[in-house]
Length: 278
Image (tube, rainbow, N blue to C red):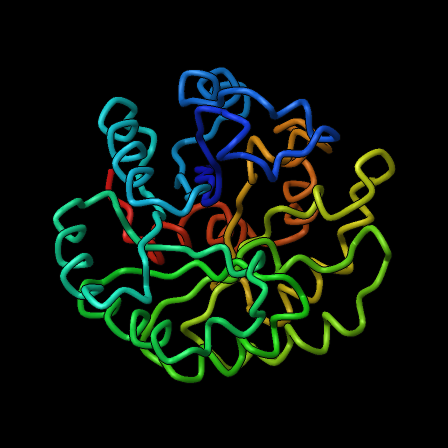
């Protein structure tokens, strides 16, 4: 079965740009580059990946594009762009010439203004994405789902994907408020969801495959098997689990699904969403 990891990161570590990597996350306070991923890639039979932004700079876009030139298994890039810039259309036009750059993301989860995505300038930036065939990754926490719902209603033609299930409070075992919020995305066929980032939201030292089943049940019921995709969130996942354990969670869960449904989740949905090429 073909496996595409639709959500992973690369970086050259320094304390200033990666202040979010606190001392309890010491295991990832170092460089993680494609050559570091290659053994993991081979051990787990991963075909290719989508590299997702970490820092909110255009410079990082070029860093990822350079890596993708060197390592062909990087089939797509989700970069960063200032969606609120006055010259947003010009910047998008510039980046549209880079075929492996598939879309953009902003770290909305870290914003003091929890409803930043509904601000006029942000909305204007999103409005410009479609003409250049760019996707948008929605990185939010559970409390922001109420705003994300209003947000996606503005753009029925724009392709969106919610990263990390919108980070439900798995460690606390809370599910009901998140369930009520995430289920409201069911009618929106242009909105997908990545089953990713779950282990980092759990108790890092006390989880098993069953910990995540109720959350995956809700996501599959909401989005169907044609609007979900696999992401490891490597190397961030390493604070709680190595790559093969993360992969095992979803392999076990989807082993009860048909081969076609498994193929949708593990590769074809990501290919379609990000327009990935061999």
